Length: 471
Image 1 (cartoon, rainbow, N blue to C red):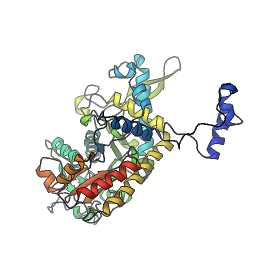
Image 2 (cartoon, rainbow, N blue to C red; image 1 turned 60 degrees about the horizontal axis):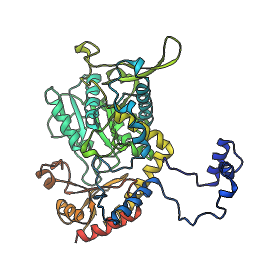
Image 3 (cartoon, helix red, strand yellow; image 1 turned 90 degrees about the horizontal axis):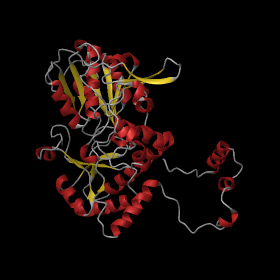
Image 4 (spheres, helix red, strand yellow; image 1 turned 60 degrees about the vertical axis):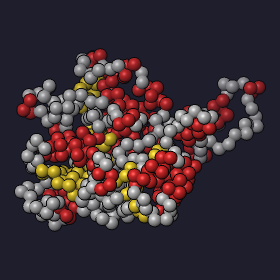
């Protein structure tokens, strides 16, 4: 993380070697001896930046300001992750905040370079070689990925796991409704929570649709979430094997933070990988603006929507950045356009770039491990409450689903009274209230998420409040 301090002897030695110093004392040689405190200060153990901010916010709350609001354990596609001050300080510079779409490369080199770095980092996260300069949000990225698969295969059907965010599936169905494209939702296994591809005829290599009717074509792609909406980590290797049998593309929706702990989609052979980038330095913001991330294989590069920033040299031989491979109707003939996406989320992409650079690979891994450790601790604590059971048995990363005694909406109201945003309700009852509960897709229950912002004290307090609320 950005506030990471070396804490092992080996790391201290590596730091000193890198700085060309003999001892830690040399770090402070500019401070006169008379001003140094020889015995040290009587301080407690060090805290990470998120923990320190949470602790200070708690002191403010105790002072009666009521500034903290509800402690968030909700997920379902948007997460209460820590945004380091460096992100808002750097991305908030006037050059980025006031920048327009960089049509004129000669006057937008800073923005173009930031987007180039964004693309490079997204490719490292996804494991795929080509990434675009961002899209509106993760749902739109999924739609564009499916469009790429349809264009690449010439087919007219897509199979989408019920584990993909219901809001994303709604958008996909809406945007494809004007075309002769069939969207088949493949259900989840009632026990594990992983996608039951054999219901769609995928395991046998057949062409049966998820609703039992005959299909006139094989799918252009299989779209799967990793982890899925209910928190279950899907087996992308098995999905890729099915895609190869069917001649379909694998479209994977991945959690970028989870890539600090799990193998990336590219390592499993995904053809297109998409993600919602809100977890990378972007606050919740009442639903947006967010950030769509899209990566693909080189073979699909010319079908990618939006724009790609490339690095080249100018007439003087100096490094330069340009916008290239723009496949929208404003740049090429309309009949050859792959998308009507006319811009990208530049400011959000810059925020994500600063955040990823601030964390680095080690910091991202630390955030992922802390989130996973907190989630598994909370899972054990909540499942010890009377009448509470895991909704699904599949492995999870930092989000999980539970079967709870009272109706989930009632439980959430009780938890809110105790100061907690306790999760996301799913199932028929949630859907009947106009939410995206997926009445036909999920059992009645509650999705709970843990991020690196949640301290051990908050997790224990939530578990205690949860135990009281389910009685």
